[in-house]
Image 1 (cartoon, rainbow, N blue to C red):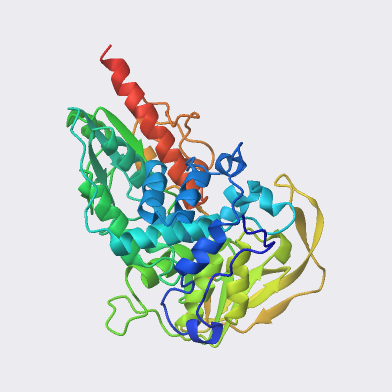
Image 2 (cartoon, rainbow, N blue to C red):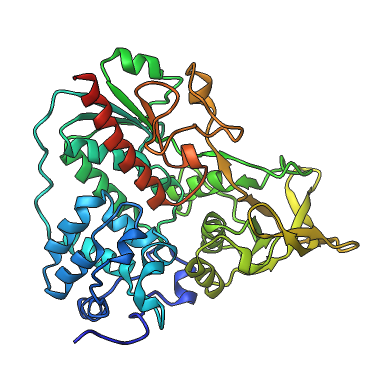
Length: 463
C-alpha cells in the first residue's frame, strides 16, 4: 500500500543557533527509514508528470521504485544515466519549481520529496561504492569544453560516455565553477563536488585548470589543435553594481568576490590567505539565492547583524523558500521594500553606513513583478560597516572580445539556438553564458543538450 500521508518526511537539519556559527552542512540527509517511507508516497504514475519537469529528464518513478526495493545502487544507476552530478542536484536543485511542481501528490498535499530521495541515493552510492566508473572506448574524435561549472561538466561527461576525447579548460585553480566558488560549504560540501569531478575524470575527461580562454589560448587555436567541436560553458561571473555613490569604498564587495573568498579560498579559516575583515553589521543587497548565501556566510563569519536589503517584498524574492526560511532561522534580518541610494564612508574610505529609501509596489513590470516605487521623504541610514552587492551577473566579455564572429546579445550573453549552436560553426554554448545567471540544473540541461548536438555535428562532417 502506498504511503498516503499528505506531508513529505522532514529533512533533518542542524539547529539554527548552532549551524549559524559553523560551515558544516545544514541539511543532514534522510535516514534509510525516512527514505523508504518517502519512496512509498510515490504513486508511480503512468504518464510520469514529474519527469517532464526535470531539465535532464531523469526517470524519477523508476529510481524511486528501486529505492522501495532497497536497491539503492540500482536507483543510482538510473539517475546517473541522465545526470552527471546526482549528489549536487540532490542538494541545490530547485525541485519545488521543477519535478516536484508536477507531482500529483502536490495537488492535495505536499509532493514527493524527489530531491531528498536523489540526495539519499547519491550519498548511499558515494558511501558504499568503491569502483570508479569505467571509461568507454574512444571514438577517435576530440572536443573541448570551456568552463568546469555545471554546464561544462555535464557536457564533458556526456561526450566522454559517447567515446569522445574531452578536455575541459577552467580559468580557476579548481574545477567546479559556481559549485566551488559560489555555493557555500554548508549547502554543498566541496568534497562532494570533488567526488563528482573525479568520477568524470575516471570516464576519461581531462581537466586543465588555470587556463583563461582568450588569454592563455584562443578558440581559434583550439580548433588548430584538432578539437572538432567546442562548448562554451563559462558562466556569468561578471558582477553588476548599482552605480550609486560609495560603491568604491573599502568594505564593499560583489557577492562573487565575497563568496569566492569564503567558499573557494576558505576565508573562514584562521590560516586563510584571503582573510575578510571581521564586520559587525553587514548589508547584503538583493533577494536571490546568492544573496541568501552571502548573508548566511557573513553571519557565520561573526557579524552581529546581517541585513537582506531588497527593493521589493518577500513574496517577490527570487530565492528558494527553503533558503529564505533557513536565513530567517539563523537570525538574518530582512529589510524588504528598501533600496540603497548611497554608501557612506569615513576619511579612511571605510564603509560606515548605507543610505536607503523606503519603497512601495506599483503596477507589474515586464517581468510580471510589481514595480518598486520610491516613497517620498522616506530616507534613512542603515548602520553597517560592510556591503555585499548581489544584484546579478553577466558573462565575462573576454571570450567574445577575442573571438571574431561570435554573436552575443545586449546583455553580453552568447546567442545560441535550442541545441546550443552559436553563430560560429562548431562552437556551442549553454548555461549562464547564454541565459545569464540561472540554476545549476538548467545549466546542466543545456550542457546535456549541447553534447548531443556536438555529437551530431561531428558525425555529419564524416558523411
